[in-house]
Length: 319
Image (cartoon, rainbow, N blue to C red; front, side, top):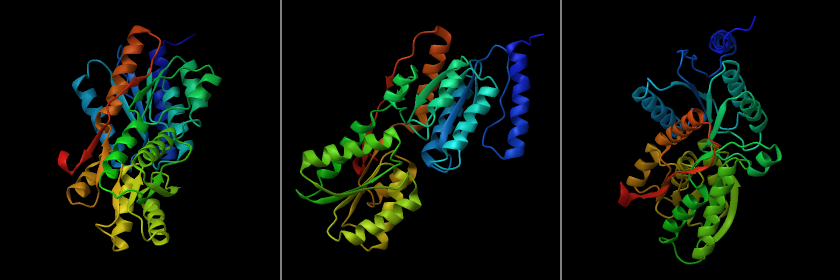
């Protein structure tokens, strides 16, 4: 005898909760309301204020549209824990959610489990960090990306920085996880702006999106480059680490720092003069953009397409 889909989903949800209790996972309980689509939001590190803001925005949106869908919010413990994120997706698949909106920890590593989700009939929408287009094509897999142009955003932040520097000034780029598409795009945008403005990129190093690692990397860069004029960081968490290194080196006011994400801590540093600029990609709405589009696809059955969302530069003048 075959059980109805919703009854099977309820049973799977119970199994998932038992698994989480045993393993200490990060998934929320999976709600079950007949007739309502269930949306799983799978993010990266919940230690990062950007993703905390993203989760809060998604929860607020669901509260305003409680009659339309249920929401399950998931996140991993650190930016690079691909295995845990794969496990979270598998848990959501076992619970038979209708939609997965995912900010992948890795642009290629999530593809096999994402394909299994799509093959199961789940609508999958990619936000924040774009999945690898070539790998998607090779798997004959269509997963829409809903998010900003990271290269354009970093380019614009870089130009705002360049306006404050002398021609030919030495700068350094601190990047995210090298395999992440958004990390590569932001670094490329910074390089575009520095090349256009005639600046010299003396080094480019990865700090994997982490504040503590960025502080260590920035300290070494500052020590090796006493004439350095700026540090361009691919997210605000790393910019916070870079600011700490600049202060520790006694070079506050000499070395400018820019970031990307517009978290509240970065805004405070911009207001206080420790950071010059960041990029606002509306993190509190980024998951909402993805959820809204996923529900449209679910309801209409239309072939999914990429959707570009806004990105703006934030400086002290904008605060």
